[in-house]
View (tube, rainbow, N blue to C red):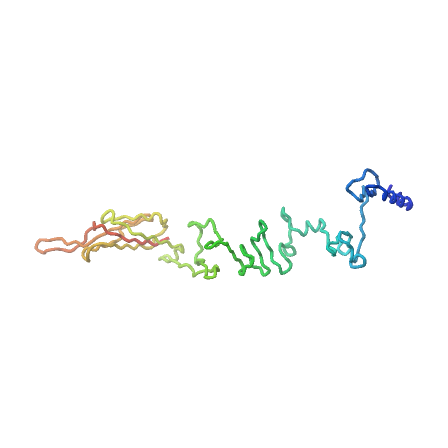
Length: 306
């Protein structure tokens, strides 16, 4: 019906004049006239036809170069719609651009890392925010800052709280694996993370035994008297390399106690504590020897192992 009407210019002009006299000031073009949509100034209805916008190859031509904001045209070089905003023509994103060139909240698939990326193509940083506050930044030079917007190192963390680093490593227990020959990690005067000297390597007759050195040290009383025992089970040794014991007590060299190891297990030490003894002997006077010390001596013990 619309095509038939357009073949008669006089009829079209008459309809337009009638439209101008209608209080609602609405125009309906349809191949099946029906009631109009009250909120639409211009309404198009069709089941097999569409709206063909002007096809523009150069938006700098007059009068397009001074067109008002809100005008829409089809720009043939980009094969896309352009809209006039703030005195400039800008491209309207189509479905291909949205699905093919945008990062989606539900995740992207089949991303070509050689041509597509998350970031900037200019010398501008990338900011990550929560509650509209910068939490992390990747600077234009590639430095990553957490808690700071001006990182000067490849990775810089600032907690904002004195004596708190802001870095925490979990699940690092005494049972965690140890790398042979690994050094310790420290912090220099400027807060930079540095690697200290390589950890010492322990040797036995069989060669390298471990890098995870343990030292157990304590002082114990002379209990039971002369044959004290020391519980070292809390150290969790799997091999003992060395045991050193010394004793404190006595008034002089003749009464100072001597300590030694009688036996040991991975959880207990069996010690002996002796002191000098003068025994009277008929005709010969006295004979010097050793006897178990019953004095309230203190024994100092150091155990090295892993």
